[in-house]
Length: 268
Image (spheres, rainbow, N blue to C red):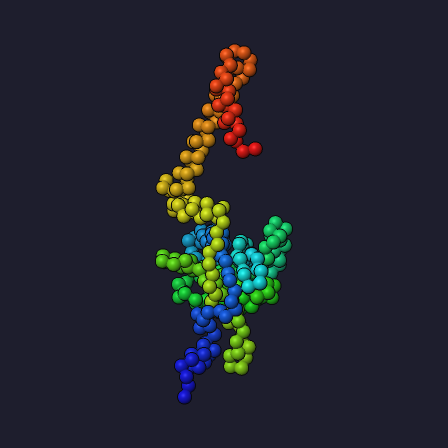
C-alpha cells in the first residue's frame, strides 16, 4: 500500500514543473530591495512602449551580496537576447561586459541571479516554459543563481506583490538527474533613499506627472519654504550687524547677546 506522502513525492518527481510550487529546503534568508523591483518594472515598461504597447519578455542580472545563508538583492542590470529557431539566446559577451562595468562602480556587489517578467498570467509559484533552459545557461556564469520572476500580465499585483523567487535543485527523475525550480521565501528590505523613491513612484500619474496628494512632495515644499524664510531672516540679522559694526546704528547689547546665544546653538 502506497502512503499519501510517498504518492505525493512520486507525483512531484514525475512532474518537474510542479517542483516550483514546493518550497526550497536550502534555508536561505533572502532580502529584496525595492530598487530591484523598480528597475524590472521600468525595463518592462520601456520595452512595452518600444513594442507599440505589446508586452515583451525582458531579462536581467540580479546584483547583491551573500554572507553564509543570507542573500541580499540590491540592484540589477539589463540583458540583451535574441530568438534563434524559436529559442531565447542570451548575449553572453554583453553580460560579461556589463558585469565588469558594474564591478568597477559597485565593488561589493556580485551577480547572484537573474530576473525576467511573465507576459502571461501565472499562478503563484509557476514558471514559464523555457525558464529552466535559461537558468541552466546563466548557471554557467553565475554559481547557484536565484531566479526572480515579476508577473507583469494584466491584473497582476492587485492584491499581492507579483514577485516570485526561485532556487534551482537537482532531483532524480526517471533515474536521470534533472534541474528543477523550488520556490523561496523572501522579505523586503528598504533604506531611507529607497523609501523616498518608492513614495515618489507610487504617486506618479499615468501622464508621468506627480499627484498633488503626494506626502513627500508636500513635505519637500514645506521644507523649501521654511529654508527660504530662514535665509531671509539671517540676511536681515547680518545686515543689522554690519550696520552696528560700521557705526551707522547704535549697538544694542541685548540684541547682540541674543545673536551670540543663537550662534552657540548651531552645530559646530
